[in-house]
Figure (tube, rainbow, N blue to C red):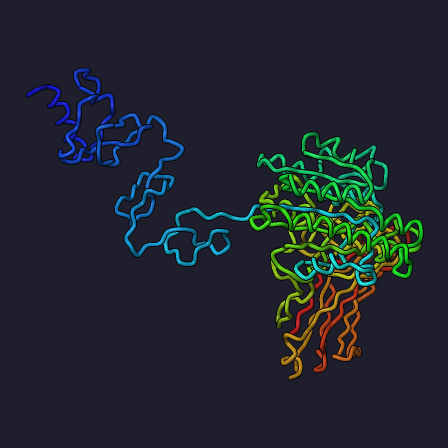
Length: 585
C-alpha cells in the first residue's frame, strides 16, 4: 500500500476511535500531499477544524472534537445551544452558527434589555442594556423648605420619579469646605481632613475625588466637572491628576450652559455641577423662604437645572442610556449664615432622580451616600480599602420596618448602623433617630472613655452612644404599632425595655431612657423612665450596666416613642448607652 494512503488511514482510524493525535504525529512525513484534492462525493472526513489548534486538519469536513492546543484559547467559537444538531461542546463563545428546529426562536429573553423579544424561547446572549450615566448637582446653601416656597417645576418633575429625603444629613460643621469635600469623596471630615474653608491640610491623596475610583476601573468612562467655587475644585483635582476629562469654572449661568452644550456632543458618563446662587443670596439677604432674593435664587437654580435636564433628554442616544441625577447640598442656613450644628443647618434635601425605587429614603441618608450610589450605578464595585463612609441608597423600597411581636422594635439601638468615631469633638447625626443636638456615636477603645473590656454587654459591637461635646443632648425615635394593632387592642400585652447605661468614673454625666405610648390622637397613655444613672449608681466605675423595665401595653396604643437624654455634669458629656431593646409580647 502507498505509505501516504497508509498514514491517512491510520490517522482516520485513531480519530474514529476518539483517541486523538498530535499534528506532528501525522504531518512529520513530508510525503503527505497537503494539496491533495478531496472528492466531494467522498465520505465525511473527521478531524479538527479549528485553525488555532496544533492539529488543525484543513481537509476535515466534520469536526470530531479532537482539537488540541498548546495553550487553551481565550475563546472557541461555535454553537453552544445543547439542543441544536450542530452543538459544539468545546465552544466557549456562541458564533451564531446554531441550527434550530422550526419552533425555536432565538434572541434576547431579558425583559430589562433594550432588545428584549417576548417571542424568544432560546436566549443567544445578544441582550443589550442601557449605558449608565451619572450627574451630581450640588446646590450650595439649599434649604429643604425652599422647594415648596419657590417656583421649581424642574425639581417638582424630578421628584415624581425620585428616591428622596428632606432630612439628609451633612457634616456637623455645616461649612462649605468640609461639606463639598464629603460630597465628592464619600467620607466625613475626620478622613478628608477639611474642617473649614482652608484646604492646605487636605487628605485627598488617601481619600480622593470619586472620579479617581471611576478612572481606576479602566472602563474608559468620560468625566467632567463644572464648578462655581474655584479654590475647592482646584485643590480636590490637584491630587486626582488625570481623573477628569474636562474641568470648567464660571458663574452659575456659565457652567450650566457649558454643561448643557457638552451633553449634546460628549460621552459624559459622569459629571458634577456645583451651583452657588442660593448660598450667595442667603449670605447677602438671608437664608429664609420669607426673603424674596433667596427664593428667587432657588427659582433661577431650578431654571438652570431645567436647561441641563432638557439637554439630557435631547441626547441622540438617550433612549439607550440609563441616567441618575443626584441633587443635594453641603448645608442649609438661617439668618445670614450657617456653620452651626443644628437641624436648621444640618438637615438638607437629597434627590436621586432615576433611582430604582421612588419615594422617601429611610432611614435618612447622608451626603456621603452620594458617591457610593453614583459608583454603584456606573457598575463600579465598592472596595473596602477605600473606606467610604456612605452606603448605596435608592435601590429598594424603603421605610421603617413593620412592628412585630417578640422582636426588637428599636432601630439602630446598638449604634452599629454606621461607623463610630473617636471622642474628638466631631458629632455625627444618628440614622433612625431624630438628633437635634450633639448626641453622637463613639467607638470602644479610646483611653479615658469606654474600653473593650469596660463593664458592659458581652455581645457589644464596635460602637456605643455618647452625649457629645456640647452640653445636654437628646435623641428619640417613634415606632408605629399599626401592624400589631389587633393584638394590642385585645389587651394582655407586655413590653420589655432594656439598655446598658452608664458613664465615666466619678463624673456625674448621666443617661436616661424614657418610653411613652401614645393613642391615635397623640395623647400619652403610658410613660416609663429608666435612669438617669449617676456615678454613685455605678460605684464610680467607668462602664455601662444593664437596666430593665416591664409593664403592660395600653390597649389604645398607636405608637411608642423612645427618648434618650444625656445630661452633662462637666467637660464632655460622658453619658453612655448601648444595646437598647424594646419588645412587645
